[in-house]
Length: 196
Image (tube, rainbow, N blue to C red; front, side):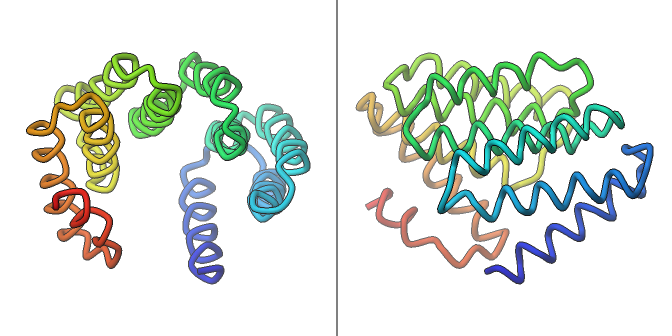
């Protein structure tokens, strides 16, 4: 698991630095190092993870490293979600969608996070509104990764299930199963349980 995270870290690092999203490679490397340090603290110390993410954001903004900035804010929002502080998480996610330089794939992730936070506080219609925005992005702007679409179906199905809209939930869970099988996801048990 840890090795996978480091592999993913280096893939992202080389991808974004090769795109020239950061002006100075040594500074963008620092952003990634701070992110990795903050991410490693998620399970143990949310306050320290957030403090490091704030440092990451400040450095990323100073070199116009958009992805570094966004990942820092996402990490902060995620730590709030882990603490069941969904109002604080929503504030962070709304700040993220306010940036005009976001890519469509980033917006899809942010909308997914917003929808999930609304779901967790019982605001199901608000959650569905943000899940619909992801669907709109996918249909009209860009083809999103299959994993994002699978997550959309999964979280929307949870909302439908909580609203007793079982036919719609079942349809979405079946879509999740189909997409996760395409991805060769090894963790399909939860989906099978939901369908049952």
